[in-house]
Length: 115
Image 1 (cartoon, rainbow, N blue to C red):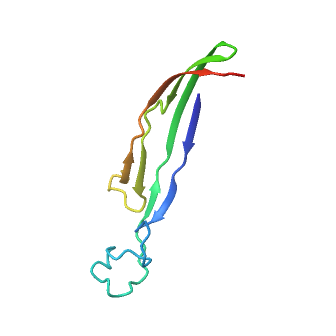
Image 2 (image 1 turned 90 degrees about the vertical axis):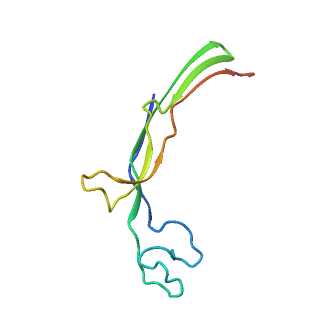
């Protein structure tokens, strides 16, 4: 069994991504003012929220060079989310940007060694 926990981390300050000019032209309050150099106007911080994955593997060595295994990833069906840290809803629920579900994966296999 293995448990992997990653704490919340700052991804970027909106608007995120590359822009050849160095700023987002459609970011409020600069919408429609592409002909002017806008003042510094950072948006809210975007965070990747805490995740915790539980994995497991069972192996059985049948002979010296032959092994059977079953492996499971993300046993708890954990999702990964990104949220806007500065603007949660009134009840405290985070304002989600992205919702990623990697799913649970179960692998069964055979390992043959020729040493």
